[in-house]
Length: 326
Image (cartoon, rainbow, N blue to C red):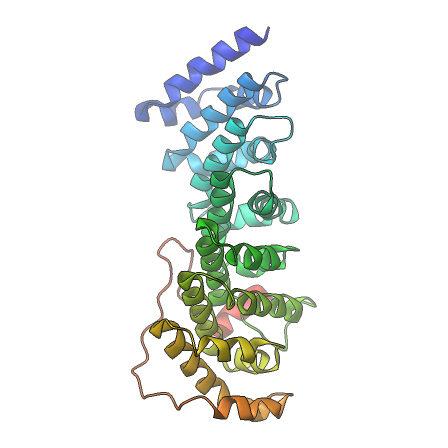
């Protein structure tokens, strides 16, 4: 009965806590099958033990690829929390966190079942019923998964940019994480007019709007990520043209030039100065007066761009990056 199943899985879970057992246990025949059965058991205590086994096994770096290939469905079912407990859902989220930090797993997780992983994470991050720790974990995972190879697909998932920008305007720990994820997207999502993807311009516009939204955040850390995101976009001429024509973006930057934080205000002024060079090519030329109000930027040595060491293929050239997305 359920007691036998619970005791069996509890014993395996205890064994899987020891480092020397993690890789060995994953090689045991039918073990993951038993864990899957346990994850769907009607008793919550059984599901908790199943989730704990997956979490313990995910700690071992050599297990991550195999665990993703064989148990992604089981993990996602536990993450969704349908009929489960908060504990099993929390364990499953932590498991997903370990898998998401592995560079070889990023693309597979983002592309799985047409963005199901990202959609589930967005729902958990923004749900009023989610515990604060789970919302934080879900937002962190979105950030972990965002890299050059995945950013466009993540930004393409409905509601991602809107939800993250909304979370970034909160006054808790979640705000900074959400803003950081948007900044990371801005590092890799760039506009190109000749793309074959019909949603390319729309996705880019949604991301720009997310940056505009977080420009009115209440946290200085969030505002710092906002100007960093603008700076990433302003590095490319095609992006600058889109920025100038995006409704509300220049006004948001103008507000940031008066922020009490020196880093935020100086960055905003510098970005507006950069955009002023391209205003003649933009559709809306009425912004010239706004740009003239910005003090000329001082000559500064361009600092080399830095990317997260956990991101896959972080160094890139724009044209090569665009071709890989088309």
